[in-house]
Length: 116
Image (cartoon, rainbow, N blue to C red):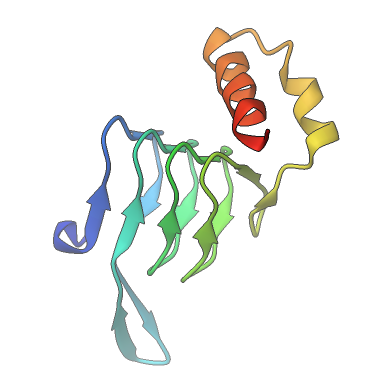
C-alpha cells in the first residue's frame, strides 16, 4: 500500500495479501493522484489491483486476483470478480452458498435481504 494520505478505509475492512492499493499512478510520464475509498465491511481478495479514485460501497466484496480499474464505483453489498471486475450475476451466487466458510453464506443472505 502506498500513499496512505490518499487511502480511506471504513470499519472492519479486510485486505488480502499481495493487494496493490495506491493513490497514485504514472501515465505517459505524468503523475496522477486520487483517493481510494473503501466503505465499512469491504473485502478485497488477495492479489487484487485497485486503481486510483476507486470508491467501494459498504459490504462490497472483490474476488481474489481481480483488477478494479481507476475511478470505478463499486455498489454497496455487491460482489465483484475478474479482470476488469464485473458484478457477480445472481445465478453465479448460488454456487457460493455451499462455500466452506460460513461468513460467505451470511454475506449472501444479507445481500438478498437488502434486495427486498
